[in-house]
Amino acid sequence: MPSSAASGETPNQDAPQWPDFPSAAVLDRALPEGLYARFRQSAGVCTDTRALKAGELFVALKGPSFNGNAFAGQALEAGALAVVVDEAPADAGLREDPRVFLVERGLHTLQALARAHRRRFKGPVFALTGSNGKTTTKELIAAVLQRRFRTHCTRGNLNNHIGVPLTLLALPDDAEIAVVEMGANAQGEIAGLARIAEPDAGLITNIGDAHLEGFGGPAGVQRGKGELYRFLQAYGRPILCWWDQAELRALAGDYQPCIRYGSGDGVQVRGRHLPGTGAFAALEVELPDAELLALRSRLIGAHNRANLLAATAVGWHFGVAGPQIAAGIAGYQPGNQRSEWRTHGANTLYLDAYNANPSSMAAALESLAGMAGEHRIGAVLGDMLEIGPTETEAHQAIADQAGSLDLDPLVFIGPRFGRVRLPEGARHFATAAEAGSWLSEQGLRDRLLLLKGSRSIGVAAVLEGLG
Image 1 (cartoon, rainbow, N blue to C red):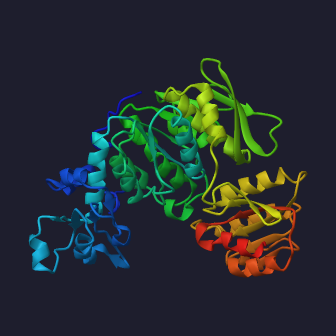
Image 2 (cartoon, one colour):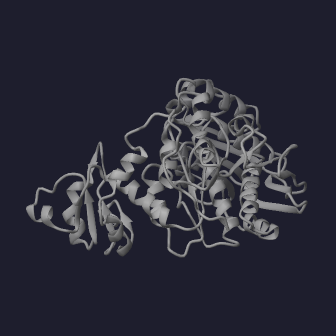
């Protein structure tokens, strides 16, 4: 297995430095003497006293509507081994307590602590980001790597300025490899996460229309996601690149080492559709040594083929045998409202309601259309958030795409879909609860229903109305 070689600051200085993502110099100053040793004695790190377990290290964070510093004393009473605060406690006893570490900013200390723990880790850290499919790809990669290594990976989508440090701090001593998902809403954030996680290799799933508002448009998304490649390139570390997408090819350029995967020429890991598998994502993959793999999954849609291929390329890069790669992918069961199959009463649901953007919504509808000959199909679609100035056009395009399909029922939820021209026969509701009430009166049976929308729309709430 490749060894970890992370150290130092990324030379990338073209992205802005945000308060939540300090420079390496700030991280160097943010870790007080003795805190890492105390962490090594602890049962883990907690940032919420409501979930605190005895023996954990409590790090007080604060935001617009909360201040963890106010709970430092409560954390100690609950059995915290030590607490980190960035406001001097009002209680004189706490101020003198050796278990209390007073720092300049608790968040930066959490991040510095995570970087220190990551540097102690001897195995490789693999990072991934992208506009769509990050969590599914991360889970597939972990499923493949687990066939050979003791693998630690991001839980759920703990992929931001707090989640990535918590993921790294949860690295167990017996782990052999780590997979870290990185999410971002704006430029500069992936660069900041890379300074903390210091990955040894990584990939970008794709460049799409996600968080356009924060990134400042499609070009901003490409620059922001490309910060992962720039970090790795600055240290001569491998990148893995989906060669089918022009935006990713442009980011990779002629850099080496680069493991290219895709469906065309010039790639080391090549995949093509495996016939006879219906709507499920499946591939025949040729590895660099000419070994052929038949990959079958429980994911639907052509858009998931790139995710399968990414996991295959990562597995091959780290020396996982071909049959083990195939077994890992076949054994992955989607969940947590991400590409999740459910039987609900007399209907079958494809629940993909954890998040949504124009790219992923269009891909989901395309996948649904591919099953039209096998099932009576319908869709419940919720608003897509964080799109920015083009949100009306984006929602209109999705409404038009859905209207071109023979969907019964076709339901839209949220104010943004309420402002566009909907297809004839479609129903619109302000909330998922209202949509669920209407669905409960329809007596739907033997339908295949797509449920998709941004998480805060709560599309999954309509399940109560489906019987």
